[in-house]
Image (cartoon, rainbow, N blue to C red; front, top):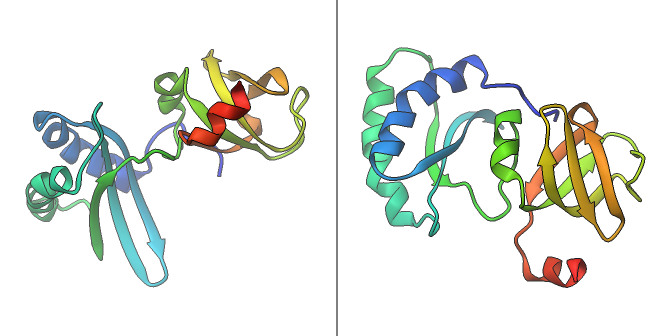
Length: 166
């Protein structure tokens, strides 16, 4: 999975519909994911707010989003609509999510061994992003990684990581 520069067509159409609803209710839209799992197609709307997202938060906008998507005609089939929290281990799937992630603890995976990293999968802090390269730091020191070398990024907010970073 390379970091995408934007939404796919279905995700972009869904984002246009759901973003105003999500923001009107005091949440931020982290991601829209349209994916096939087994025989079923899922449209996942991942939301966030500073104090975290509860099940009640998700259900409070589920019906509104479902009704708006049903009224639109941008897709033939969605088997499941899911409204959920972006989560503590949220995936960073899009380049536009990187500036929002600066200062966060992450799990970074690369396609190949990159200079400055001890292995292809590391825990680190995203220190900066200049549009093409990430500056990261961890127990290995610091490194710069091109976006094109990244296969996956997830937030890493667990306590054991605090011990690693000293």
